[in-house]
Image (cartoon, rainbow, N blue to C red):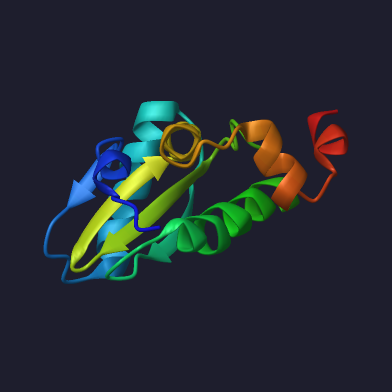
Amino acid sequence: MAISLDHLTNYAFYAEENVRNATEALRRAAEKYTSIWNSGSMSFDLVAPPDPDESWAHERLLRPLVRYCESGGEPIPRCTGVFVSLFIDANLYCIAVPDVLDWAQGELDVTVGELRDLYGTHEAETALR
């Protein structure tokens, strides 16, 4: 089933149209993240396909994002210091992980607990200690 990423991009704390230099755009996004959340930052980069669907959202966005966060010792929903950098065509949208999860709950009807069960490393308890 096709999905719209419009609601997800509405959560962006940083957006840039017609990106010519991705490295520089990501640096600017990281600086903005750091200034907003007073935290270090790591970008989880992703390119959206022309026609994203639920399978893409689960297999290319949520599964690897959950694993990335948990493997780094920062389990969802907070995953402090990580933001998603979503490239759609030539545009960049940077979204904090909790906002991506909020979108997923509304758009895909999946909870944080379900995402942990489905895709997590199941080491969240260790990471939270």
